Amino acid sequence: MRKLYTRSVLSEETAGSDPLKLFSLWFSEAKEEGEAEPNAMSLATVDKTGQPSVRIVLLKGLIRDEFQFFTNYDSDKGRDIAENHLVALNFFWPKLERQIRIEGKANRISKEESETYFAVRPRESQIGAHTSNQSSVVPSREFLEEKFAKLIKEWDGKEIPKPENWGGYSVSPSKIEFWQGRVGRLHDRISFERLETGWKRSRLSP
Image 1: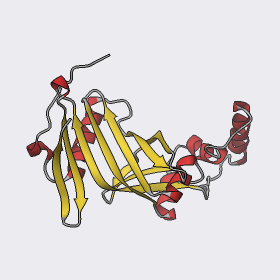
Image 2 (image 1 turned 180 degrees about the horizontal axis):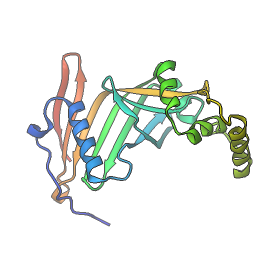
Image 3 (image 1 turned 90 degrees about the horizontal axis):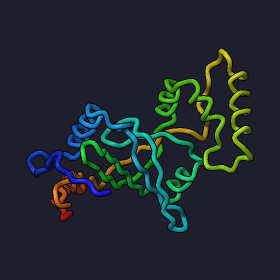
């Protein structure tokens, strides 16, 4: 199950001094390469007992140099973030033999921004947001499907409002690490840490 990583290298010269520019470049290359859902990212949170959890969410934009995603505020991740704003993100692009690790702080975006995004979501996704009380226990799959069908009829021909407990989060990064697979497991790891004066770049041992 081992793979030889021979695709590319990551030098200090190619990394540059701005990790957000490098992220945008790598993200564009992941899309061009045809990575499956290149905007899929792991989101790690910690609850009030100290128990970490991780799940996949979708990046919806790098807005004002922050990583934005949307979810139900009453979900497990929403409750975790309400208790502890510190989170971690991870992107993995196997075709390019790359991953990006991000640490930072998550905060809700404005209601107006969330409403703007909700309005352009597919109609089925809008109804799904009303159907699901995310992370809550349900009696069956049929329960969800019946509720979904009922809401389709209820909002037929009508504009669907954003649920009050649904919206976006924006993760302000404090640390970003770029990983490029290399031969012999001597991977390239270049880390950027945010300081008051800007970003500090370091090379890490693999």
